Image (cartoon, rainbow, N blue to C red; front, side, top):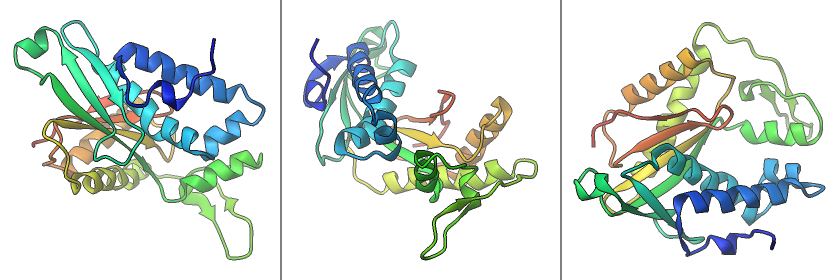
Length: 231
């Protein structure tokens, strides 16, 4: 079997589940290499960056919404167009008018501005805590200090980060019927009630968006929740 590559996906219209299978095979082929985990963690090349920031979030969207009556095929394009993927949909939900036969999908990430230091520290086999605890002084290596959050402080601090990522994408002109999937690199491990609180707070901060759907994903636990927003 040939080693998977971006070319297996780029520009090809694939059934959504086949798209996921190829993406996961690509992920595993990189992870198995001697420096694969570090390459993935640091997004050291175009393949790793596209995989983590576009392809895997697209897979999460597909696996959330692909079901009887809504069969989704995907055409991902490795380029600079205003969306990441075309979604070709068929089934009774489409013939009944609930979803359009052709839609579009954009992927983005929401993370604290210090998150990249966490990746670097882990790559150096050094301890890393919440990104709020990163200390970086000029001429000195970054340090990560433990942080204590009170009550839901970590949630109230992260919700504006998610809202800002969505607002940034909302300023771009997308085709009608575009959905957005937001991969969250959270600032702590969230219990189910904390995740629900985060979703409610993001909805409060973003009453109106131009996207047909906004799916928020926790990359650590694979939680995926659609926002209840007004277009």
